[in-house]
Length: 122
Image (cartoon, rainbow, N blue to C red; front, side, top):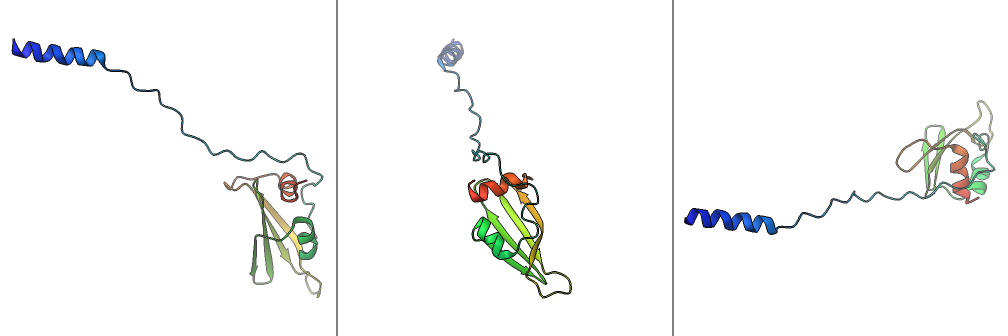
């Protein structure tokens, strides 16, 4: 009889229990919206000198010299743009942009023209 009373009290207590609250999905980090369409085109800064690049995009967030090359990195809330500058072969002319790479802050590829627009806030 005692066993019956203990078991029945557990059954009654279990019937009174509430269901756990539903699980909510984890919060995802909100990325800024892409900037509006751009006046730039892919490769728009190829051939620019470092001075021209700074005039158009502002001061770089990072500047690295490696051998005879110069890498300037520009950042916005939307993307990161790396511009690689090299001196012309056999001439004493200024370094010029020969290669450009654009990516999101999460390392995903991004359209260069859109990235350039976000850097200038156009």
